[in-house]
Amino acid sequence: MVNNAGTTQFCSYADLEGLTKEDFLSLYEVNVVGAYQVTRAAVPYLKKAADGAIVNTSSISAISGVGSSIAYASSKGALSTMTLSLAHALAPDIRVNAVCPGFIQGRWTKHFLGEQYDAVNEIISNASLLGRTTVPADIANSIVFLIEKAGMMTGQILTVDGGKLVNESVF
View 1 (spheres, rainbow, N blue to C red):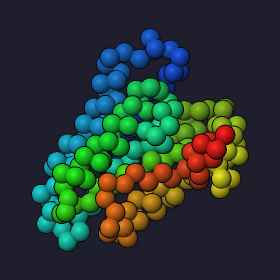
View 2: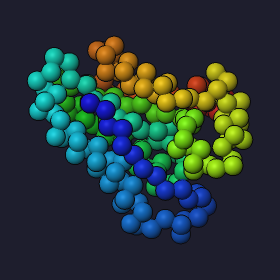
View 3: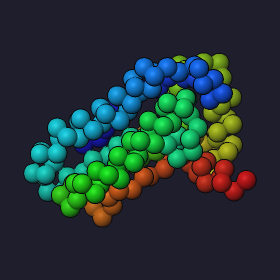
């Protein structure tokens, strides 16, 4: 099972008045509580499977603390921590892992970045060790790997960002 639903609300980190309590709750409701509810509903079926697996789609924001807003980054941090907790709770019957995508090329990103899209994509590509940003297939392939090939992995948070996060830690 893949928990891939997510939402965000863009707000400058310096604008602490820009997000309300309701904004935070809305993001947590989708990004954390929604994943928990779906997981809870799927567990009886996954326990019947020979190798039940759950993959949560978190974000590089969960690790870096930087993203579209403080509420988004913190909700994805909570999802990553919930991944670890569920790995404990559901072992040995069900493996639970997460992927943390970095910047992803695509319609959604183009829509929200608008005219800044190409410039941001170039900056992030240049900061990546692999010299490019991810595309949706990169994330999908990582998820398929965790489900089909990673039978001895549980409680892992897999960063899929072309090495950008690692490169940032050098400077």
